[in-house]
Image 1 (tube, rainbow, N blue to C red):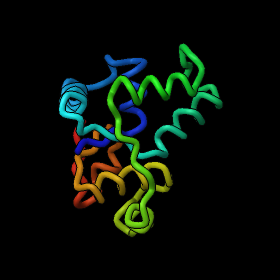
Image 2 (cartoon, one colour):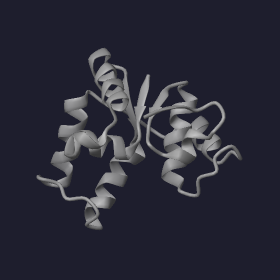
Image 3 (cartoon, rainbow, N blue to C red):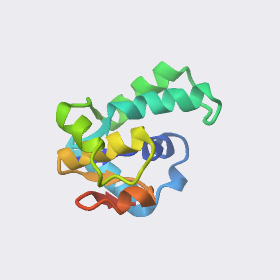
Image 4 (spheres, rainbow, N blue to C red):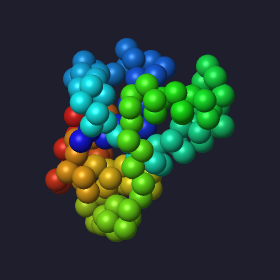
Length: 130
């Protein structure tokens, strides 16, 4: 399984040149194999960033999110009890709850996380590629 961090999803859709070749290839492999997913909080983050004007979408937010999920064949993964507990564990240096949940989702599934987040890359047991 391959999990995409929020910024990886946004870059794929709106600024693919911001993905590294490794990140882009990892996403495409996950898409082709049907093993690509995201934490459900990533969809909320995109909506929130749009509302705050930090990203501009070419279409309404819900349509963008629906199209993104369909285009990448994303499995949207909920916050499970295991993810919630792990996200509050001491191994996450991140203060951002969304990043903690995204990292914990990947760890719980023993998945690779596509992320440029240098703090997540330091978490023991979390496989991060960029």
